[in-house]
Length: 295
Image (cartoon, rainbow, N blue to C red; front, side, top):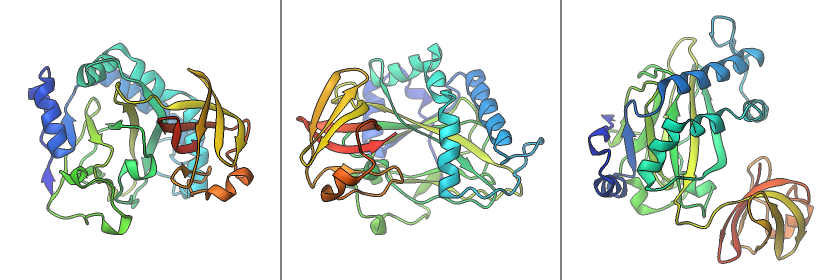
């Protein structure tokens, strides 16, 4: 597996950065985020893992199984602390992302805390396949030093150029993939269609901790975030937290996701958990919902 190429030398040259991102699908930067703020976030995550009995007092993994349902509860506990929101609001961190995008960016509430226990593995995937319609960039932020033993992020360079493909067609891990050793303050920006994965954690008892945050192209239609107020067979009405009441058309092409991530068929919408009162995020195009998912 090859090594990622750091793009620090192109900081300040947005034309060349855009060209590199368009060609390779990722940008890797070393030491550009406020390392103190990143470490403070890591301390809060570790404290939560100790409280939830995933780590002992020495920060070693306790062996508690991180099943899908348990992980959902852990994500809820972490999200309640608004850790990633505070991190991206740190002036130096916000300024970095604004410089890359050419304008202040809006982060959407599709962040995820990646907790990888010893022996843990992750699936090869594309973010846009599960979250279409946002024109978003994923920023992967390591919260600790991550070496080859802990694994970390790996990307399939240039794989975004083929768009989203079925899961069975994703490229296997081989020499064409890239990785790096990471430190707090580093960040990897990924095109929404870039194929990537978390490498296996081969350490004896160490846990790997990172955060994915996602921001939209400032020129793209803004995500709708709010609570559903009404649902019928052809539309969903949302009381947006930014834009008042927004009505989005839905049809068979809309990706309707349940709280467990499974797809809801259109004829099952009225009986689903996408019901009045539910907080959701939606991507949209010309008044039509591309995706709606619970938060």
